[in-house]
Every structure is written in structure tokens, then in C-alpha cells.
Image (tube, rainbow, N blue to C red):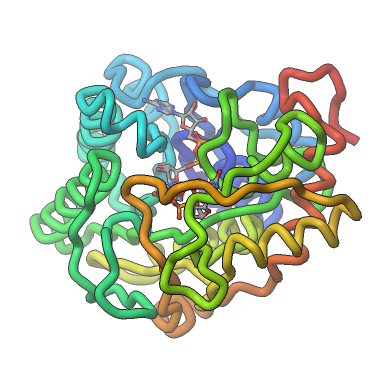
Amino acid sequence: MTVKTVLVTGGAGYIGTHTMVELLTSGYDVVCLDNFSNSSPEAVKRVEKIAGKRVTSVTGDVRDREVMSRVFKRPIDGVIHFAALKAVGESVAKPTDYYGNNVGGSLALLEAMNERKVRRIVFSSSATVYGVPETLPLSEDAPVRPINPYGHTKAMVEQILRDWCAADLTCTAIVLRYFNPIGAHPSGTIGEDPHDVPNNLFPFIAQVAIGKRDKLTIWGGDWETPDGTGVRDYLHVVDLARGHVDALRYGFENTGYRNINLGTGQGTSVLQMVAAFERAASKKISFAIGPRRAGDVAACWADGSSAQQLLGWRAAMSVEQACVDGWRWQQQNPDGYRGQRTAG
Ligand code: NAD
Ligand code: WQD
């Protein structure tokens, strides 16, 4: 069987690095395109070390036509498109940056794919497209009603991909709507590396545990949930990465457009997450209950049955395991990829 080559845009980022490891160890060749606006070349080196295989790394922007025509000179069998900006609050403050990068970048990528007749794409969408859930668990046919510019960029790219597939019945777009990815690779050498104060719960807790932050503020203790704190569907990033390999395989065997949730189907509250991290790190996490955060919802978790039926995928790793692995990454890399410690 000939080896397939996958272009991974945004491959140096949090989810991209873990996915490149799983692709390489599943026998794919990988071309990584990243402008390193939110990542580091060191991350790609560490992926190569874990997998024991080389990645073809191209530094550049998906919106740069010259870079894209260079990337697509080599035969590419399929694309996984991670490259995007992802901070909800920043998207409210800088909407044009978000529409430009996330929607404009996706269009530029599809144009380059059209030119080279590359017809398979797996796209990083988000549970954020559902907005405020009406019923739980969230299945893929729940209404798409984003409540911030970031969410709108994902919904727009979904629509573009739907139309792209409708125009050419040989095209395939697998749109993965991720719930809340957490944790790190069990090697402790790749993980999430936020450059500013983390907005997300998991990296914030990890930074409290390592002593970089004094305490966690819990955004609301009076939600309509069993313990009053927000409930989310947290999935281990390695499970999520494996879901991409399954989606890609499905994309090579099928045509057309598909939305697929990737989540565990289980809800975990903020207080439960704090307790799980305390057990993993054998440390107390200081916290205080603060006001509700604008735009938050009480609870959100996935109906994961499509992923199971179509891809044969289900989350295999627990929140506890994600805390153990995330804590290992935090301890071994207290300053992320900027620290001088290297893999292994
Ligand atoms: P990340 O910021 O770690 O990775 C994104 C990567 O894309 C970075 O390496 C960045 O440098 C690169 N990039 C951004 N714009 C680019 C451009 N124009 N050209 C080339 N490279 C570019 O983010 P992540 O958490 O790994 O997220 C990956 C994808 O998954 C994103 O599309 C994000 O919206 C989506 N997603 C993330 C989450 C989450 O909680 N992390 C949840 C749902 C969906
Ligand atoms: C989880 C829970 C907070 C921080 C976001 C994006 C979403 C997706 C994933 C990309 C909530 C609480 C958090 C803190 C807290 N990203 N919390 N104190 O909001 O579910 O989803 O990331 O697509 O689009 O919106 O994740 O980790 O920010 O919050 O109490 O300092 O933790 O209120 O209940 P969220 P999160």
C-alpha cells in the first residue's frame, strides 16, 4: 500500500502536535504548515522525537498564495485544517482578525486544494457553534447559533465546506466539533502552551498548581448544576488526536459533508475538575467563587453516538488520566516551549 501524505495546517499548535504524533505512528507522512503565531518550531521537533519519524515543516501562513502553491507542489492526499485563532474574548475585541484568519484562511486553503484537485479535508470546528444548548446531550442536529465572532467563524467555514461538497460530489469534508480538550501527551514533552493568562480552566488550574498563579477564580457558584459550578465535556487531547486519524480514514473511504461531535458524553463540574487535579498533583488548588463569566452556559456535553457509529471512535481516557498527563507536562515544561528543557 502506498503511504498517504497529509497536510496539517496549524500542526505546531496544541491539538495539531498531538494529531501529528498519531498520524505518524499510524503510518502517514505529514507536512506541517504553521506561521507559529501561537506556537513554536520546538513543538514540531518534539513530535518527531516521540514518533521517531520526520515531519516536513513549512513556515508560512495559509493565506499566503505563494506559500500555498509551494506546499501543494508535492502530492497531498488529504488535509487536516487546524490553523485558526481561538480566543473567544479576543474575537469580540478583534472580529476582523478572526474573520480574516479563520474564514479567509479556510477559503485560501480550499482554493489551493481546488487547484491541485485535493478533495479530502478534516476541519476543526467546535461545540461553540451550538451557542446556548436547548437540550442535553448535544447532538449534531441541534441548532447552530453561535454567540460570539469566534463561533461565527466556525459556523461560516462549516457552511462553506457544505457548499464545497455540494458542488463536487467527489469531495469529502469531515467537520469535527470538539468539546473541551484537556491534558497532554503521556510523554510530558508536548502539551498546551498558553502565552498569556489562560482563559481556559485546565491550563489555569495547572498554573495554580505549579505556583505561577495564586488562585483560581471559579466563574459562578450558582449555576443550575449539581454543585453550582459550570459543567463541561472534557476530553483527553490524545483521544481527540486519535479521532482525527479515524476521521481521515473515514474521509478516504466516503464522500460528502459530515458533522461529527468529539466528546466523552460525560459532564464534569469545575469543582470536580479541581478535585481531580488535586489528586493527580497531590497539591491543594486555591480557589474563590467569583461572578459568572459573560457568555458562559451552565452545562454542555456531547452526544457522541455519531463518532461511534461512523468512525468507530469513542473517548478511552478519563479526566483523571488527563490531569496526570497535564500535570506531567506542566512540571517538565514550566515555561512551555520557551524553557530550555528539551524532550526526553
Ligand atoms: P493552537 O493555537 O494551539 O493551534 C493553532 C495553530 O495554528 C497554531 O500553531 C498557530 O500558530 C497556527 N495558525 C494560526 N493561524 C494561522 C495561519 N493563518 N496560518 C498558519 N498557521 C496558523 O490551537 P488549538 O487549541 O490546537 O486549536 C486547533 C484548532 O481547533 C483551531 O481551529 C481551534 O479553533 C479548534 N478548537 C480548539 C479547541 C480548544 O479548546 N483548544 C476547541 C474547539 C476547537
Ligand atoms: C470551562 C468551565 C468556566 C476558567 C471554551 C471556548 C470554546 C472552546 C473550548 C474553542 C466553565 C469555568 C474557566 C476559569 C472557571 N474553544 N472556568 N475559571 O468556556 O467551555 O469553552 O474553550 O473552540 O469555544 O468557549 O471552556 O475552559 O474556558 O471553561 O471557573 O478561570 O470552567 O466558567 O464553566 P469553555 P473553559
